[in-house]
Image (cartoon, rainbow, N blue to C red; front, top):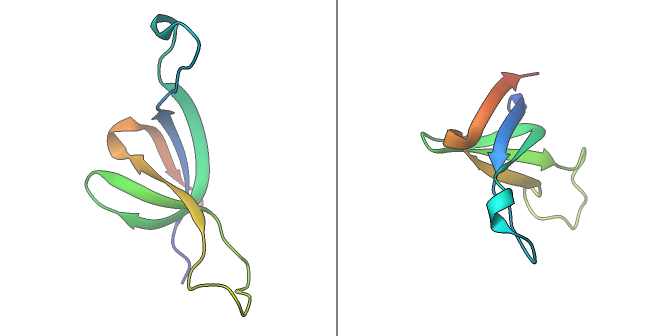
Length: 79
């Protein structure tokens, strides 16, 4: 069974470089992906994975984000 597919709008950290840090703040981003893991503090969201595993691939190869729940602005299950 596939894990739930989620839409998440969240505040992300902003790296400032060669600019005035007083004019910057967290940016708002969105992501869609499958919930791999979740606890009281964060969700692990897989953003990209193979449709079929190739013979040379490691178990469960994927790419994703760990998002702190305190930074989530909106969360919707979409599948």
